[in-house]
Image (cartoon, rainbow, N blue to C red; front, side):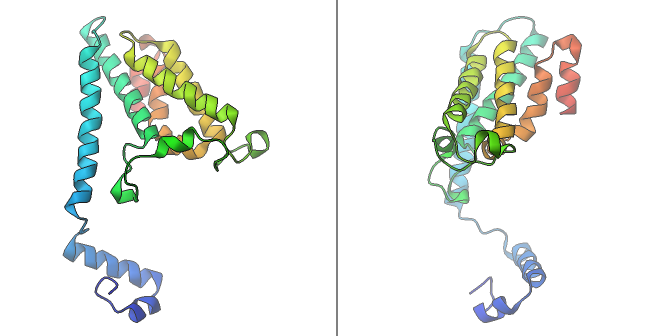
Length: 201
């Protein structure tokens, strides 16, 4: 049974007719994802943000309330960027028993997509491994710092730029395209367009 169609009839349908049939079937029946799969992902989402909240409560606040609010927002961006790099969205819906994206970042010889394959090759090497380590260390250092550590944030962005050029697979896997523009803006001083850049990003 192929969405209430015999297999032979389904195979004879064009792609357009199949998509039309799927759209009608989903409208009538919903996505029909088992609740146990959704529970896992909702649990991961809750754990992710609960851990961030707990960490922020444990780190003492510094500066004015306005400055601290900006710091909390940028820390949330960094936290979520690191969480995506570890695979916080992975799970049963994507065919994994548990998030495992970080394994590829720390493996040498695995396939990667590079804009400049003649410079870095198409397999992860020692330089990629080092950049991934620096990426996580800078991110964690910024999160645990009680003040706005611009140096660590800029190093994190430099790692993102490297990953975009030489390991685009993991750049997009960690949603670098979504967080990158805001984190670049966050590297500038407050009177140099930080807030405007983050809002634009």
